[in-house]
Image 1 (cartoon, helix red, strand yellow):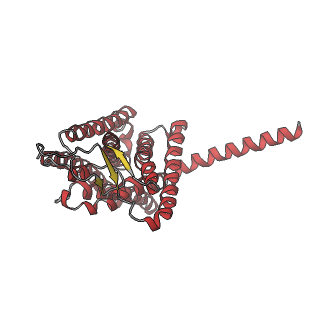
Image 2: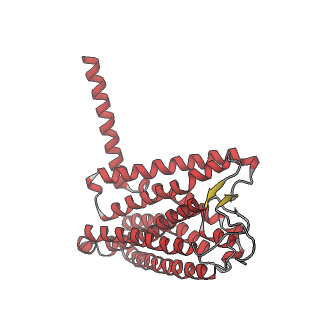
Image 3: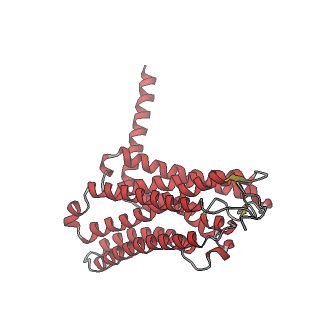
Length: 322
């Protein structure tokens, strides 16, 4: 096949959400508002946790890094998607495509490990509260966070490296709203069996390992909650875990459906919905799930707002007196 007179493609056209010409203005406004809320919510959370010393605990260090990852995910996907709503060609170069996938794969893999680390942190806090500071030290927290980002980089480097063994000489239309690895496999004129096998093995291992860690942690948490004598304590702990588990279920469910299901290369039309879930919806919901339902974060926010209002009123009073 390579000996035939094929023109190798060095750029692609993203067609995933571009066919809805009658709805492009509405879709642009919806996704633009989602993007703004996602960025403001996650960046505000990162700033709040980094500035407030009372939040420099393992739980909030994990949460701050998760918010940073969610904002990076939104930056990697949404601006290009918004541009393509009104772009005539919707083109993206091969190297831009690989860079977008590399960045997204890194943050999403790190996200998997961070969610598992957060579940373990909650397990220690609820099931072993007397040993929390010894079992979940700040040093261990930093090591787990660093390991999550290293694993994310290694995982993406493996898949991007294997992409260079492929050649793209057929259609250059990607039925997606960003450059994902599966649409590239479908466009390859070289059999991507090795790439698909490596993707299935590595993604499957990461999914099984992190999901098992989350499930084991939450099962122990549930058993501990049911043994609590205080009804109020049970409700508070269950409410917190339920909201966390909702976010985890959305993220892992969409990832699992995207990369672990059989017949990956034959069902390209099924990629877009789960991709919207884990790249756009989950980063939007996480600040609300993990922060606005957290009394400590709300307390710190209220304290900072009161300080700002008091400082502004003091300046206005001083200027009037002067």
